[in-house]
Length: 126
Image 1 (cartoon, rainbow, N blue to C red):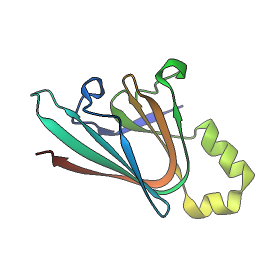
Image 2: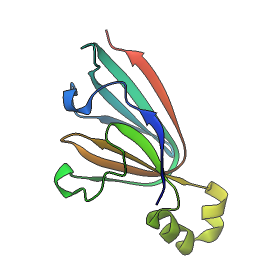
Image 3: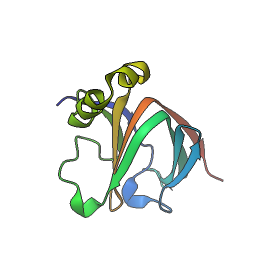
């Protein structure tokens, strides 16, 4: 299965200020991550997954494969999860045209989103 890096975090997940927080707005999920970068600056990044159809979190202790997603958002192309969803309801699947995004954070775990799209909002904390 091919994975494509979509975004690399500007902070180290091993140096998070706090656990990620989530904001749910309609079908969108915003994931806020706050931590320190390589120059020890505190930064905050908001990952926005649009039109989320499903998502899950797996504990760091039960993550069997990283898919190259350590401190990165990657898109898994033609994943088993996408194939299963297409099989369940091909009409809605084709309408939403979802993608499978994965992010692994050190000592936190793996987050996976089936969503139409993904974007990033960055800003430095004060």
